[in-house]
Image (cartoon, rainbow, N blue to C red; front, top):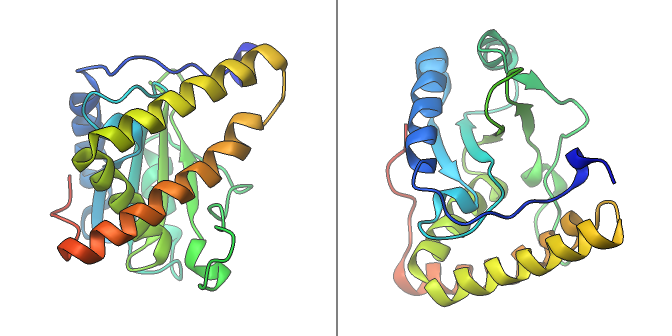
Length: 198
């Protein structure tokens, strides 16, 4: 298996919030009001959680109609648009239309630290999901540690058994299980997203 297909889970790095802050400020300066929110999402946004050393950024936009200026601004920063990634994983039994999981996806500029920019439409299920998932793991340490242990096991199996996309195929339904608990928590505490991170 080539090294770029290996999955490396590393211990939490204190530098991750600072790295997001730099990236988020750069993206905010480029997008201005085109971005309704810019959030640090994924495991690197959860204190003390092991993760792949990739900064995940969610940019929330009003809609995908008229997306050209957003794409142009991100590409102007050197981010590379991946047109083959247009949707998030659709959870089994999801009551929502597939359009609720639509997104646009960009990778880091050449020679920059690994960064994934997920552009999602404000108010859609997948946009809310990313913030809720992060906030739930921040508030529920036992769930975060169980998620971490699962990812470490999957990464070892993925890397040692040369199973291709196994890590990602299993990670999505595991995240669905976490999200089910997160939704119950959100309803119980009347959760709402906080302010934008950038």
